[in-house]
Amino acid sequence: MSVKREKSSSIVLLTAIALIALNLRPFMTGIGPLAIDISQNTGLQLQGMALLTLVPMLLMGVFAFAGPFLQNQVGERRSVLVALALLVVGSFLRLFTTSGWQLVGTAALLGLGTAVVQALLPGIVKRMFPHQVGLVMGLYSAMLMGGGALGAQISPLVTALSGDWHMGLAWMALLAALALALGAVTLPADTAAKTGRIAVGSYLRRPRVWLLMACFGLVNGGYSTVVAWLSPFYRELGWSAPASGSLLAILAVSQAASALLMPVFARKNEDRRPWIWLVLAMQVLGFTALSFWPEGAPTLWAILLGAGLGGCFALTFIVALDHLSDPAQAGALSALMQGGGFLIAAILPWIVAVLHEYTGSFVVGWLLHLGCVAVAIALVRRLTPASYAKSMGVA
Image (cartoon, rainbow, N blue to C red; front, side, top):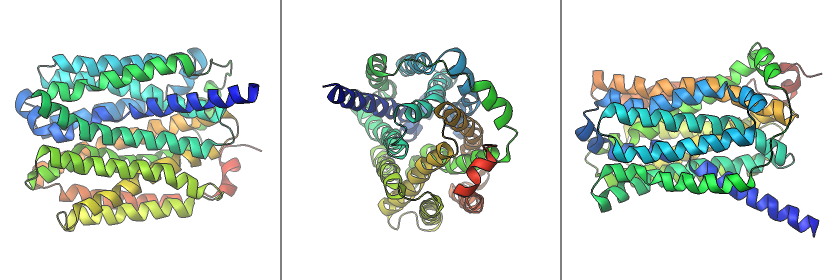
């Protein structure tokens, strides 16, 4: 009976993790298909619209560094629940925004909540599922990307049905409230581990941590740019809001599938690099197609690019967690990797917006990301399993 109860408890916890992850991207992917409506009603121009992605990403980076502190001083469970409450409030307040800066303010609240969840949930996964880290992180990543598909698809539909883009963004409060309720009854109690100071104090002096930050940032920069500008790119080519939203949803579904499947394919390989190179190659094909043949086979381009971005996101997380066996230390390393990585990722959509204003096209932005992928391919060469222990100072 106890074995059955433990299995049932694990399934419920997995459900909670999946639902929480589902809330971490809709508030960003829902913006793109509604960009023209939002711009017309709030006065936000292209660089201002970029802030709706840049601000949350910056907060994801800055507050990820606080992950070890929150783990130590507040506790993982309490911090995640407060963060989910911020997601509820931030989405609900979008019903009442009347200016661009108010909308950016809600983006900040949502980014802060997301930052805390992303910093602490991988550590919970490492602690509660020590022998299935890759599979559970694959589920987490897939649901995170699936949330992106949900936002891109549902937001324009809700807007069309209600006639109000505010409703197209505020419905996400219901999803966050459901995650908060389930998390409150399923997330494990906080432990007394005290590893945060060690992680921050010593890990940031290790080149491997900065290498992981760079890899994570370059990949997620591609994601944040695609989330912000893929729909506006195709709307400039004459597509409607629902059609461009559907394309972004297809990309996000492909991301989710790849994030779920790539860890399964790679689970028997201690060296994850061949799989990472595979998904980086998919990104090369996707960004090249957007640059030179955007209307050739847009659905195929979205699938390729989504598979490359989603698979790389999940595999990079797993590589970071592979570096250390202790759950708290691995969670702290994951938080720091996200901290630097999201700071890099935050600035790239804004750079693409600036390039668009100078050139009148998003194509230069897609070419910029081709260069980012090339750098990532070179950096991944150093992520050999034999180097994990030495790079982190473990005997």
